[in-house]
Length: 276
Image (cartoon, rainbow, N blue to C red; front, top):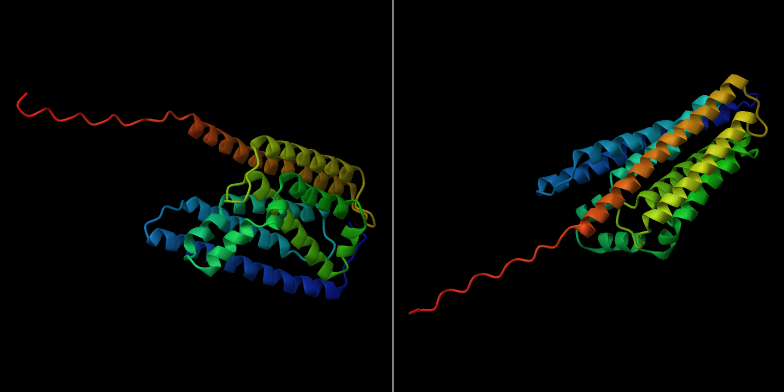
């Protein structure tokens, strides 16, 4: 059992933040569903599997971030981390929310603003795969290998900020690696695949260090610590495998499209001359 305990005020604040997270998740999922329904009403194709992927991803993140601050099992915390920072973001990215927004927004200021934001230099740098990987993996190393994790148990605000970073970094990393939505620059599968391998290695090493020692300032039972580390190790592998499959399918599809033979239409036969 952890020797870190949350104060009652922190628990109350976390409960309020959790309820807000769940309500926000439902609203975001409903907005996506409304946009997809609008496309279908006007005759455009939009796979329903994307609706399901987005809804499950958003609600998984909302459920994970709605967890209370009081010290619980590290394994339970790690399950929330995997949902909020890896599985949920991947499911959201697979649903291509930016593409949906661009197709549903009418031509005008809002649509132009969204395009300008997606193609802006700051966003381009944030979804640069190595930088996105550094923000994602670096944040986890900071959380688990410093006293930050212990500090989140006593502060609802800090707990919420850490959750927000985990979700945002996970979304950025998934967007950067998958590149399913239209962005200003598309990086090659080699860059994205190499970044994924490096990030996976950092995640695996972090899990191994967590197996050996808990976060600074905390004490967990050995069985709980080892279970959490194994969940982080193998759960991370599963999420990274999903990202690798997306990269592979994208590479194969692009290559098949590039290698597809171009059919040139044969010219129509000339009509016979009159009198011949």
